[in-house]
Amino acid sequence: MKASLVIENIKTLVTVRGGEMPRTGKAQGQAGIIENGVVAVKDGKIIFVGEGDLPEGIEISEDTVVIDGSGKTVTPGLIDCHTHLVHGGSRENELAMKLEGKGYLEILAAGGGIHSTTKATENATSQELYEKAWKSLQTMLGFGVTTVEAKSGYGIGSFETELKQIEVANKLNQDHPVDILPTFMGAHAIPAAYKENPDQFVDKLVNEMIPHIAENKLAKFCDVFCEEGVFSVDQSRRIILAAKKNGLIPKIHADEIVSLGGAELAAETGCISAEHLIGASDQGIKDMAEADTIAVLLPGTSFNLQKNGARARDMIQAGVPVAVSTDYNPGSCPSENLQLMMTLASLTLKMLPEEVITAVTLNAAAALGISDHTGSLEIGKNADIAIFDAPNLDYMIYHFGINHTDKVVKGGKVVFEK
Ligand code: NIG
Ligand code: FE
Image: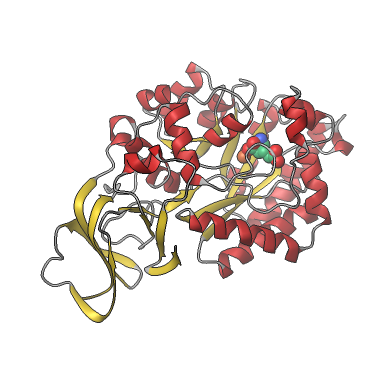
């Protein structure tokens, strides 16, 4: 069999192999590392992963793209499983407020924060949103990312604006080499017009918006910001159950700022993942472990909000599968840099390098329901591969604030080169 692409002499090959189930407990820290590794690809799929030379039967022809992996670390393409990719404007004006001690929820309650991005998103044309998000995707790809989840949520009551964001995400998925999976997050803040009657807005979400998104197959997931002053646990439950009933996979922004019981709710309702979890309770962590809910931790957000990080160690110890993502958005985490989040996961959440790489590959893929075909380097999976100019995983995480990417392969093709 002739390979279309081969990466040989790889100093550190991080496979994260072992199937499609997310890794938990000790196994989260076993990333299947091979020294002096080799990977072969054909028709966009991985046909060999191992040590030393290619086995008999897999040949290099003159058409084969051969990449020298000497001195490099090769991993599955990174997966950013929680972003607010498509939005208008930016919020650098909040920096001074933050330094003066104003809290995130205080700025939101005063009509800023998410509401100001909503105005900018409403005012932007689809083309403007597309171009801005394209630029971010290029940045992400350059950091080694091959799949991105993208939430709507800057319509806040204007369903038209929500649809505009989702359409842009779907178009980007068609046009850009990075795969984009859209999430409907109409439940991101309470619109001003419903401040006195938030339940009426929940009625609208449940009876009109969610069914429309599901019927027209516009998004795979549905997310809700369960937070003090935003959607209560009961309101979030209604939204999650409506999503499930309509065939959308539920996710939840849980216990991000206030410890409300979002982790418990995620487990109770069968969300695929609960995200943020800075304030997750002991009970919430236990429930998530029992329900196999994936914890998506966002250390860039806790850093930027100047909060303690989520309890990754307790979660891993309890058997909760942990994923890590950027949360890229214009407010709580204006950064597309998943490599930086890997360092923050290590230094602020005390995750070990092998736990971290599992968190941004296989476990992130599982949080998006795509780990059957991506998220690890093993025979039969898609050839989504990141090549870093670093001799090992520890080095990548320790030498922080720079971009280690050398090349990125998506579906067997080189789509980024330094
Ligand atoms: O994940 N918490 C809600 N949503 C985002 C922030 C959105 C924004 O501030 O624009 C988050 O932190
Ligand atoms: Fe978020």
